[in-house]
Length: 161
Image 1 (cartoon, rainbow, N blue to C red):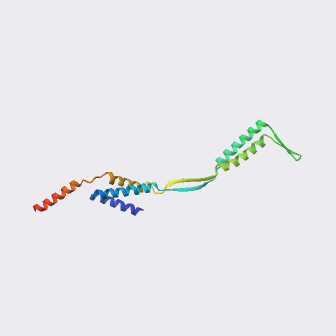
Image 2: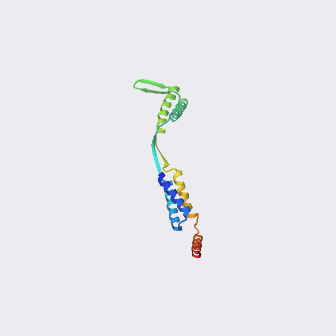
Image 3: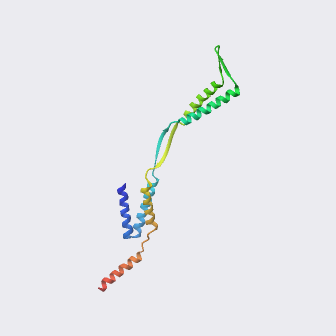
């Protein structure tokens, strides 16, 4: 990659200092501009598995505990009697049950896949290509009349000697 960039810079210096025809400059400017834009638009993506953190689990457990506490205060002690055995769940039991269920819910909230896109080519490689392409397309115009005038003067000097 570095050798290609150096080759392009050397070729651009030749075009700047030796002033070839307009068509070659415009063609080279188009190639540089399109190549730089292509490199700028190359992107990659990375997918990763996201696991829940302790903060999300704690928030879920805290929210569940508040809901359990509120349910216990609103309804009072709840009793369940099945098969001749009766169990009463009071304030602290409802709070602990709500906290446990909220913690389980908190673990599922932060679990999943995340995809992140990022550029593949650093801007330090494609920005000079784009700038040189713009320069060759729109700037640094070659004045061919001056060049032909200088050639006529040189031939006149050769003829006079």
